[in-house]
Image (cartoon, rainbow, N blue to C red; front, side, top):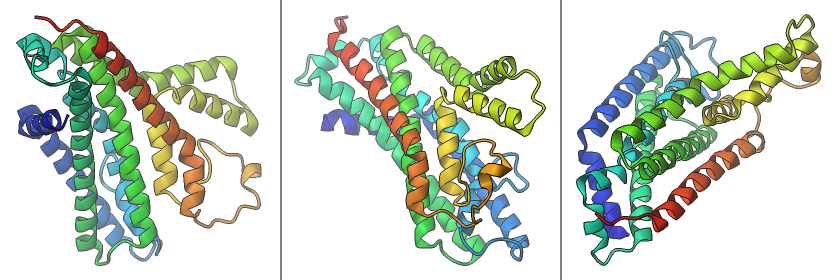
Length: 307
């Protein structure tokens, strides 16, 4: 498995399409960080003294989106790029049977390929985090505190799990269809559906159940229905987890009534309390990765690999 792992890792970092995607993500991330940092410096008198570094991830400023939103939307592209031709490319080149004719077990091959993709995602996400910290220190003039570091590290871990799901899904499609183009189109189609159209379906369902909301309770009910329906998408789970994790003052998902917020002090939540809120989201994302890779593992162990 070590041989397969290092070979696949070298192939990922020497791939042209992956390098183009990496440059695009890093340049866009640098622009978002710089714009947010300049806005925080200009509004230094109105900015909170705590968790300023987290604003670099969540603040939009002059940008169309925050860095966290950008990573949540385009991060799946990295996983799909790494996984859509992992097995189908071997079938197309006729090299799978040659590789397995060597003293390499099937499980070592599939495990090495998946772990190499996951390691590539981890290196990319960690690089973005280091760039954020370095550029943030340069723009703001002070380093992040301990809780900000922990929150950003957990954000990195959640992001790796999230992109790992799309990597496992693309790997599964690569094995099921055995054609590179079909696997790529299927992965992209499912990504677009889960990222965009699930939210539209949730709105339609909420409109049927609560057609004309006229009271705050009905508005909250409609918003809760939309939220529950959209949670079928991993993108929604990641967005909600990031919202609670990077906004220590956030306590609820979606719309909350004034009666529900009465008596709550406007103080930031401790890191442990934020983790309790998002733990179900992290567990579901981790389970989705395990299910997708488990199906892929079983399928590959039983697949016909002769030329």
